[in-house]
Length: 461
Image (cartoon, rainbow, N blue to C red; front, side, top):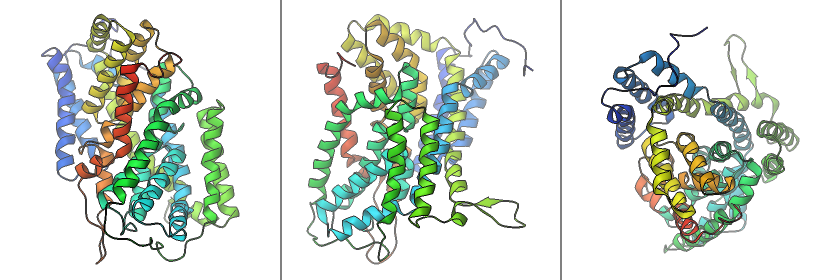
């Protein structure tokens, strides 16, 4: 049953003040997010009221409130948004299983057994974070999981270089993992499969990753302290490392062009079975129902709850984007891009510029891709740019700014994990400092410039 009168969908949604009125809600959102960032920035839940205020602002400025409400619901209800929410839900469970099973502690234990310190330990931290983020597809989860474990143990490494390497490793997974939200969004908006997109992405991400690893290792060794890495919390079992087979299974299935949901569920199932087999998990830890509490706890419940914050944030933000999509702003933008882009290289510069502006405006990588995906698709198709090429330019671009600038959640979360107590505590770092030492994001930004300027990777997508 319709929630209001049926509006004339052929007419663009109009706002008082024209373009300024249409963009005013985004101004409210960006101003609110920026203010919260300077005050210490909560997680995504802290941004919910800001988005609510932005939606109300748009409702007050629009000339057709019924149409505005329908456009908001259309933005929230896009199929690709539902795919993203499902991916976050299932990837959250997989990540929680790996975390509870002690996978990161096992990887840190390997570094301890090898007696690594200085730049070598920074390299291990980079690789560990990259493995976890690639396996889980989440940079946020990787930062919150790896930061508190790996950073305090790096007493013989350069602090900023170490935390920057952890953030860089988290960025790696966000840019190359088949289960990453940006991978799903970029391939979906450009109409190409996830497996092919990831395979084509290797030509950009692998060189950037190798450069970042070398630079992080060098920066991490710039300290006078030397020695081995202490074993976190005493002895650490390496048996949980067998659970890494689960994300490898999910990633392998995606590369073999199996369905995203099928792959994630297979990864969850195998993680549970392997974790139980090696003793890293127990049935009560997976799900526990306490009599009389009318509630359930456990790793699986915790994993699903991890997706709540970002899911609601994305739904609200996509509602805001939906109201903008109902205006004539995006068609005008497409027309401007197509009029000014006179070559494939020019079209790519416009694509990179537009998605950069979108992510800087929304502070959300996935929403930025969803907002400008159709612009990139139409523009790219006009100049014969392959779908994989378009998807990778969008994805790699949004994996740079949020991991470099201090008002985005990844840098804020990374800086937050440096706060520890005790006489031997490592120094507390700012979000700006952590972003500055994210060698992978800088290398990726340079790779994008080189790829567009020279045409590297353009001919065969």
